[in-house]
Amino acid sequence: MSGVNLGGGKAVIIGDPKTDKNDELLAAYGRFVESLGGRYITAADVGTRAEDLDVVGRHTAHAVGRTVAAGGSGDSSPLTALGVFQAMRAGAQTVWGQTTLAGRTVGVEGLGKVGYELVKLLVADGAEVIVSDVNPAAIARVVDEFPAQVTDNVVASSADVYAPCALGGTLTSTTAAHLDARLVCGAANNQLAQPEVEGLLGKRGIVWVPDYVANAGGLIQVAGEVDGSAADVVRERVESIFDRTAEIFDVSDTLGVTPGAAANRIAERRIDTA
Ligand SMILES: NC(=O)c1ccc[n+]([C@@H]2O[C@H](COP(=O)([O-])OP(=O)(O)OC[C@H]3O[C@@H](n4cnc5c(N)ncnc54)[C@H](O)[C@@H]3O)[C@@H](O)[C@H]2O)c1
Image 1 (cartoon, rainbow, N blue to C red):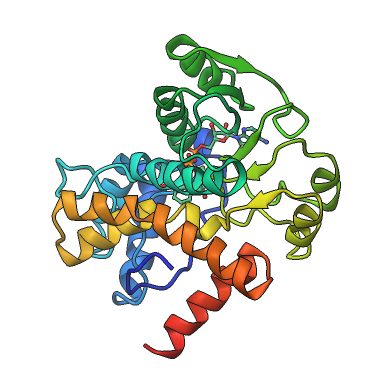
Image 2: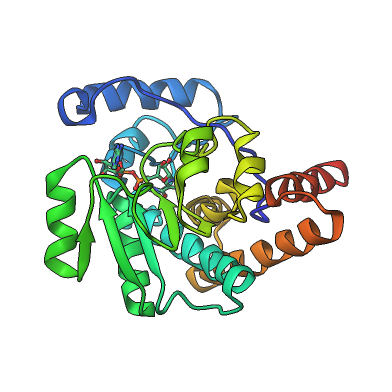
């Protein structure tokens, strides 16, 4: 779906990044990735930053998203946020007939690397933002810089758009039954607690942008790092997430299936013809 010839898998280091993360642990992880001989390429995600990938990258040739100083393409979160924003614009076109979030209220859950950057793009576009995070410092940083309203529960807020940018599994049969938003589009991976939840959202007229489509910007960036693509080419690829999302809605309408099912069909077609 993201137009890059890499498949998806994630590695998980179990531990609290605030207390358990150290150079020794990251080095051990780097040696493990190296032992896979390039079959797996690692990058940053929740709880890790480009600087951590620099440490990992001293122990493996297969770490991307390192800092520019260390020869990498830098933090992938700004381009992940840009991709989410483009997907959200395409969603807004489907729901409200306008490719802007100006005048809408967007609830951003999670103000980490991606959520913070997404708030920046939304405010610049003229959207109002309602934000939440379990980390008070993350909230303070956003509230200091942007006119954001704070809540402890974005799902229960009156936002027009729900942008899950923390952890996955927040779309459950319960949240789908109570959500006020007309559009769901965010960076979090695995947003649906069960696949059936998308159908429940659809029955209530809520449009869901498949997570793996909306959040592909970081993947596109680090894939560009692997194949040596120029930064402006990578940015264009990320911006094309708008077109890809619009295509998914077209296929969804034509086939009478959910956007998630439409995205899966497009992805399966690409795999079949590879
Ligand atoms: N960073 C990327 O390039 C990238 C790419 C694709 C997908 N994603 C996904 O996007 C999401 C955010 O990634 P990130 O890199 O910004 O992570 P991050 O670790 O920088 O930030 C996550 C934020 O979510 C907050 N949080 C955790 N639980 C919460 C809750 N219940 N309610 C509200 N806030 C909560 C944390 O305090 C933190 O501030 C993750 O699901 C990640 O897998 C990230």
